[in-house]
Length: 138
Image 1 (tube, rainbow, N blue to C red):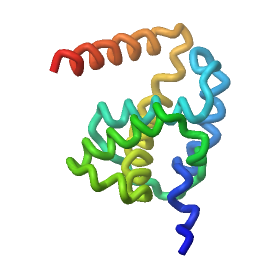
Image 2 (spheres, rainbow, N blue to C red):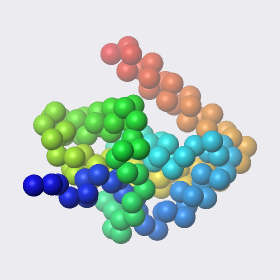
Image 3 (cartoon, helix red, strand yellow):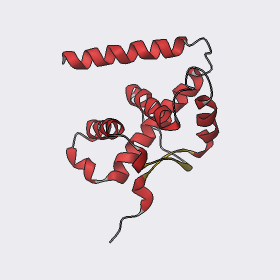
Image 4 (tube, rainbow, N blue to C red):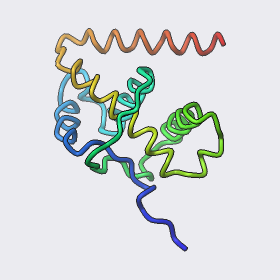
């Protein structure tokens, strides 16, 4: 039996689609695609530690467009959230987890994205570098 395409798509909150498009056209996000903005939102939401369920879904990323790196990030977050590698057998649940973290992160990103001088991206980069250094020290 063929599985439904439901697990082959990553969703965002429908009301946020225009904001994703708008942010993708503004500095400093202009060189990022919607997928990269989603991954950034995912990282922000995960860092905050809050999952915000989607009320009205809109597809944003088809599974075949995920890179190996994207899949690694998504899988790592799902494993960290559940504490169980078996979560990877349930792609629908994996995507639900990352969609909810990204939903939270996009709320943060929308608020910060209006900062036109680029200082938010510099702050974000410093935070990410700090987290990377911390994780390497573990």
